[in-house]
Image (cartoon, rainbow, N blue to C red; front, side):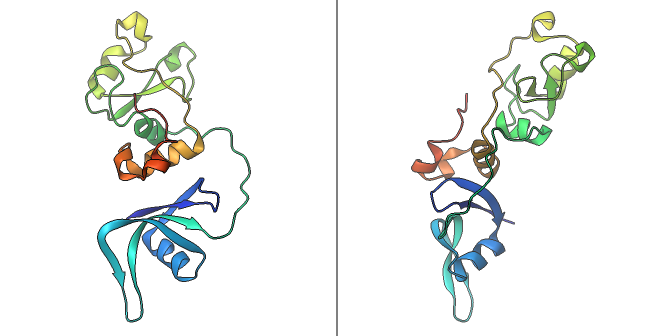
Length: 171
């Protein structure tokens, strides 16, 4: 099922919703379509609207401030675009830069995406001890960046220019 990005009235990303929920919000005049999937339409007896990719709420919704996105294995893989931090191949696992055996913890700055082979080869050593330098340093994505990266799977060309500009660096 397609995911639709929901923007606040101020154009800041709020969440993603299912296609059905996005269509209901548009039909109830609670949201407007900002970007749609080209060539796809939702049709019914009295309805014909483009399939929304990005919708914007008509009224501003106040959200509690969240300083950073919650850490998750899936989030790390998405942040690193499913690319191994050691060799650049397709990543399927998450590796701890400072291994848990040495006191490393789960967190954005201590975890990177890794292919199973490199994760096994590095084992319970730091990248320096294993002689495996990181191709890119881990970073903490903002909640909005994490949402945009998850929605597009790292392909910012799917987003409008004005929205993709705020997304975290791909490097």
